[in-house]
Image 1: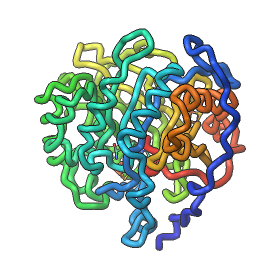
Image 2 (image 1 turned 180 degrees about the vertical axis):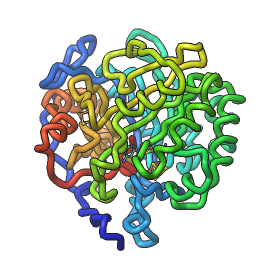
Image 3 (image 1 turned 135 degrees about the vertical axis):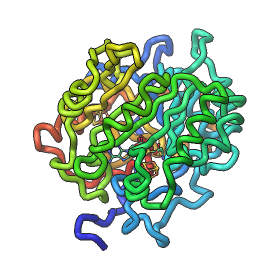
Image 4 (image 1 turned 30 degrees about the vertical axis):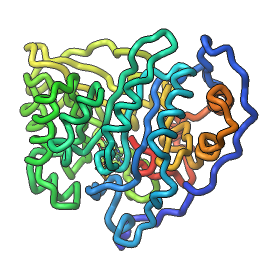
Amino acid sequence: MSDRVIPIAEARYQPLPLPEPRALEYRAQPVDLRARPMHDLRISVTDRCNFRCTYCMPKEVFGRDYPFLPQSSLLSFEEITRLAQAFVRLGVRKLRLTGGEPLLRKQLDRLVSQLAQISTPEGGALDLTLTTNGSLLERHARALRDAGLGRVTVSLDALDDAIFKRMNDADYPVADVLRGIDAALAAGLTGLKVNMVVQRGVNDAQVIPMAQHFRGTGVTLRFIEYMDVGSTNGWRMNEVLPSRELIERLSSVWPIEPLNRDYRGEVAERWRYVDGAGEIGVISSVTQAFCGDCTRARLSTEGRLYLCLFAQQGYDLRELVRDARVTPEQLSDTVAAIWAARRDNYSELRSANSASGQKIEMSYIGG
Ligand code: SAM
Ligand code: SF4
Ligand code: SF4
């Protein structure tokens, strides 16, 4: 085992006690202790992945013997849909399917079609989207689109095959992902985004080639600061390329100018090329904490609700959703009570150097 990898303690298995349901006037969105509403629900549909990205699921930890969740622990599509409805009743307007690698979950298009039928209390449509490593997208893009998926975000960390393979550590070539992106565009999935995690000394020399490749294609490339998610990636601050520096590098090649954020809680800071070649985004999770506007909740594959990407424990909603006596309103009331007591702000604490403790893995609760 490499000296940089810290073995995971099984923190994920200890749920927090559920609070008493809190009856709500559903037209009013609950806010947490920092006045943040709930806008975005990320749903992890599997904790497994065909990649072993060194910053997310290092092979030394996520090896052959790693105890992934058994099938019986996973929420069924019907359970996920009932839970999503409970969240939508409380103000969620965006659902993002994630993982692990969500396209490893069999018949994911069935779940997409169930989620696509949920409408807002006002009768509007939800923003239904998926984050994938793209390797299986060519095969699934059309069915997902036909099932009602609105948008897709593809993760791609390099155009250079050697660098990409070193990062995904599973020998996947860049061409597979590029074909997945083409298939998504051909299937009519709009607003395509590509996420690139930038690690100094690993793939930061790919920033300009990646920007060059996606400029003028309509695809929005977003650069993510390498984060200290989980407890296994051996994170070091000197491997973070601060967005400020990244913007300087880009603007020395192409003039760029800032744009306004889309909505409160939008994590990406938006920029555009002055010459009209499109938009890019930077996600400064490390150097500029955006906890003050964090409107995201996360549902794990086995139905635990996490209030922060860096949370140590979640709330077990699976028991509740499997209990036939619990009404949809009671489900929403319980989630509302959990949200109302939320005060998470890990990234602000990290900036203040006071964050500590065992965190949950990103491959378990999704990005
Ligand atoms: N497997 C899918 C994928 O890679 O797109 C979905 C799950 S993955 C956990 C979601 C996102 O988290 C990806 O864009 C990935 O690059 C990002 N991510 C994972 N570990 C990260 C880290 N340590 N720092 C920053 N982003 C990370
Ligand atoms: Fe898998 Fe995505 Fe994590 Fe890479 S970032 S190991 S593709 S879950
Ligand atoms: Fe939200 Fe937690 Fe990230 Fe802060 S650290 S932005 S609270 S997920």
